[in-house]
Image (cartoon, rainbow, N blue to C red; front, side):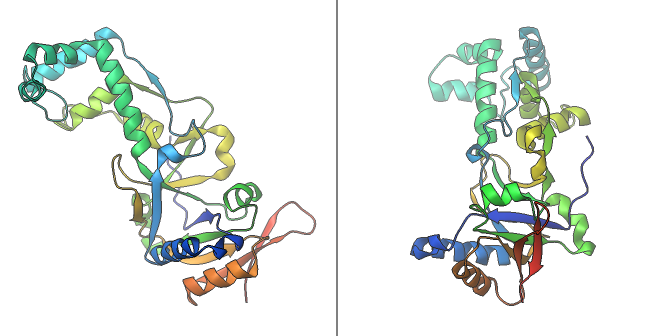
Length: 295
């Protein structure tokens, strides 16, 4: 699947409303968020907190016992009798656990245990990966409805200068919308772990690499296609928090049709005079939103 051209503008909806600003902690949190945005940083949350249970939740298919045993046999042949994944030496592992080395080796050779451990490790790893979501469409009525508190919140506008567009692929990736759940197999994950030791010997073909990467971090059901989502990604087990989205920088904020003056004034003051301010307006004859610059 070919990657889409990276947009020069992406938008991030926020659900903070004027009513919420009566709480000091929310004012402080929003102020910190805006300061970070001005510094080209946005908050990244674990994928496991997404609202769609199918989001980056592929169908994990157990490889056959023969496939697993053949892979382990080749792995041992290359790295030695006592080699384990994650650079472990099975003798050290046995000593730490206070068990015979034969027991540790047996566990690594048992397809049933490998399937269970690999599947668990895959899902735990994926759910811990921090992400931040954007859209390339600023005027989608549905997204303003459920991501910006019924059009009472606002949206950030992050832009990249055309001369810096070549750096955009390092910042965000496009979500892939599929009619069927992608698959990841036990051997796929074993190969990923083996690549930590020897990437050249265990290098994946492009089709496999794209399938596993997309299934892990970028695949959603086709019914979400209208969102036209892009994601900033961090590796599994990275820290949750603010991370850079360079080369994208904050160039504007858009307020929803139901945004109240208190929110508009607060956000406008926080972003400063060099960030453009816009307002959504209802179109008179069609179901659509018009975005106009505030004077």
